[in-house]
Length: 592
Image (cartoon, rainbow, N blue to C red):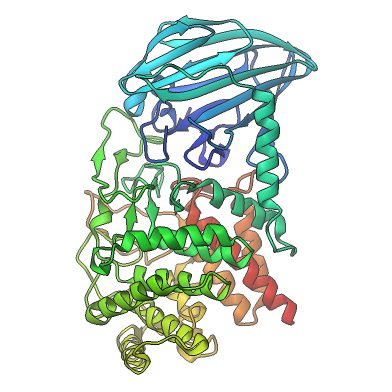
């Protein structure tokens, strides 16, 4: 039986991550990077496609879990007829190679346990060459090697490393699994207990840097830890999610690879981080982005590999059944070649937010911003693929035009505040032209709403950003009308769909409905709060918190019919917008 998305937990080392279910199995882990191959692909197939199970021999009657406070160390307590055990799972912050540490602690009784490390590289296809080297069992396929060490007896059974042991109350049994380049010697002995202490210390020190201490602190800190865990430390690039092909609709075909760094997701992330005191992460992202520009804004892509690589060619893994049969399973993301006008405004908005927080725009960065505005000036009238990465015909998307306005508005603001040099009058003229264009073509009187594109009357929840970005005030009648229309037509069971469901994307043979996009709910919370509808804002915010799993992790979407999380997990966009919603809601509540 496939594990539910809400039953997954995240651990990571700031280079990659692993997902665990609530019964003691690691079902997904890419090594050595977020966007690398995986030896454990059972999440998208079956256990035959690789996983690491560690559980009691007797059937588990109860499972409960929690993250240790302010860390990414997870404890899972499994109870069976023989007693109970605690699994302590974590990935130490990277030193030389990715390492997963699992410690089995006896809590009561004497519990017989089994550990099966079944590696299947090439995304679940290839069994390894298993052999014993010294005190380690190694599992190698091509360039990839995995070395397992533990204090209990382990055997090679077929192509797997299997350990059978018993643990009594008070006993602790460590397992250490490390990836290494197969042409090198496997790594040596590893002190699991020391690594646990150090990992907890590092995470707690980082979490304590959060300057927000309001009523939603627990949810904010958990989201911050998640965002940090999904950031590739060497470069500062923040991935959208550590998974691929978890479907937007159960059984559907809209299954995408999110293991890459999106400019848009990163921009929302840096805004969230910088507002609660994390300047170094914001600086690292800003510098990553400037490197991606490469001196020519026309070459800016919407997404990159975590190291800044430009090629994300998409292909399908035909030997994996897909999550609950949702096929195809995709590696790579063909949307990287799209033109999306909005990313320029989102990028500059984040840079401006960081600038006002003390991460000043230096001379080089200012030159890059001027080049960006020169490019947007020439292309803001062009149709694009929009914020939702439509693979159909390009359109004149309202949100994209609004974000083009944001690009000029934020630079103008920095120039006015800090006396930065530049053609400010030209920028003001262009800003005004874009605003007139959006209000003339993006708002449809007969719909009483800003619509998705100039070419259609379809609704799109991304226009909720219009007042949040300062394009129009909340009290503007068009904003009020739009909010009312979105509530009537896009809200289902208290959740907001990101676009009208009569839109048929020209991809695949059949129309597939999708779940409610959780970032849109976070935007609606902010709209309610800024409109003075604090009771509605508070209720919707807690509705968002309620659909997070027991570890306060959010996927991309929520299926309102199945009442399940759907989409890639955990998702940067969801957690970044949740943080921003919490900050806006509390700020507005404090005014009342």
